[in-house]
Image (cartoon, rainbow, N blue to C red; front, side):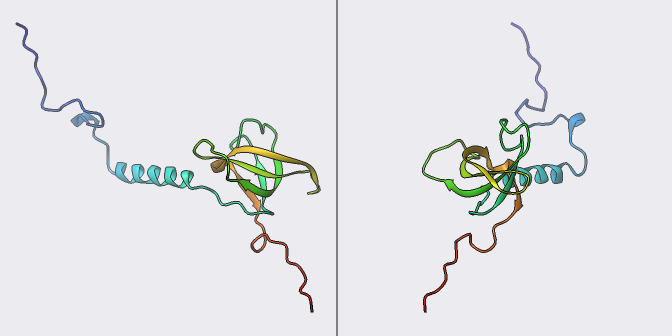
Length: 128
C-alpha cells in the first residue's frame, strides 16, 4: 500500500501557500477591481437628445468612430446582460442627421459627448 503525504495547506481554490501570500495593499487592489466591475455593470441611462460617440468599445461594428443622437432605448426586447438596443440618428461632421438607425451596443462602451438639456421632452407653447 502506498502512503501519500499531505501538507498542512489544503489545495483549495483561492488558498495561498506561504510563499505566495499577497503583499501589503493586495486587499485594496481587489476592492478597487471589484468597484470597477460593479460600475461597469451599472446600466447607463440614456435620454432622448443625448449625443454619443460610438467606438469599438460599444460594438465591434464601429471600427470608425460615429456620432449618434439618441431617440430612445428599446426596452421591450430581451438582450444579453450589458447590451442594449438604441434608436437614433447617425450624425455627420456638422451634426446633421444622415440616417435613422437602431443599434445594438454594450452600455459600458458608450461615451456621452453631449447630454440632453432638461428631461428631453419638447416644450410646447402654452395657449392663452
